Amino acid sequence: MWSVLDPAFAGAAAGLALGLVIVLLLKRLRAPGAVSSRKGRWISARYADRCGRCAARVLPGERVVWDAASRAVTCERCSR
Image 1 (cartoon, one colour):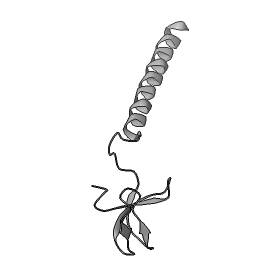
Image 2 (image 1 turned 45 degrees about the vertical axis):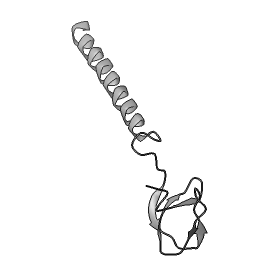
Image 3 (image 1 turned 180 degrees about the horizontal axis):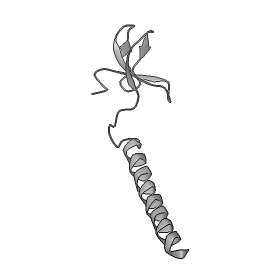
Image 4 (image 1 turned 90 degrees about the vertical axis):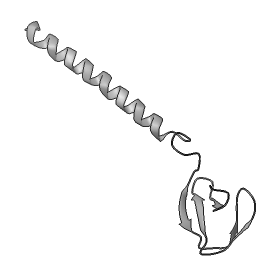
């Protein structure tokens, strides 16, 4: 019986280790700053606001970076 179970347990342990490595690599790729230092996404401003970095006036229709976590916009000039 052990001649059947030993390879099964070895395969399960190897699969678990490989799965753990893949999960850790994916977490590292999604970590803040890993791919891009800019947070948020590009949108067209709907309302007048101020840039969170340089305090420049942002008018409706301008392209800005919206960070939902901090609820702040960054103007196109500062986001590059």
